Amino acid sequence: MNFKSTILSSAIIFALAGCGSSNDEAETTPPQASDKTTFSLGISDAPVTGLKQVNVVFDSITIKAQAGEEVSFATRSKNDSTLAQMVNLLDYTGDDIFQLLDDQEVPAGDYSWIRAQVINGDTNNLSLTSHVVYEDGSIAPLIVKRKGNDGVGEIQLDGFTLNQTDNEFVLEFDLKKSLVDPQNNNEVFLKPRGV
Image (cartoon, rainbow, N blue to C red; front, side, top):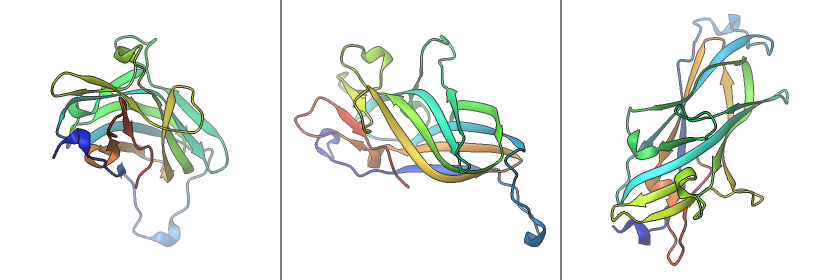
């Protein structure tokens, strides 16, 4: 199946590991907003054919508590703290995970959503913006659509809880289902929402 001629549907899986549990649910109390916990976020994907690289540039991660408070974390390159973090998703497939955030201290409790802000591909500067590299070496900008046209895309996932234990999340992309390569278009799209 030719990647460039296939339009694929969206799917992004958001997985949670390390939740604590209690044998007696009657004694379980929900976490209080004033209690602190740690939050880690990794990136992984399922492999896709027809591409050598799928480079996504993550600018920041924002989480919103149900009480209304938003907490943002800039995601910067480990080699240059002035640059947003670029991750080649094809380097982290299966159980391999790129650690985007590690042990960030945040209030425990229920959260309405998590958003990953992505710097969309720009043909004038593909080396620092999101892009794909085909097996033949050709390059195309990678775009995550959102309202507004400011060069930033957004991946949002809804509803999760941060327990008082360490919370480790993984954004797992199923690229076969989330990439769209329209015919007669010089851009590839990464669908921003999924289950």
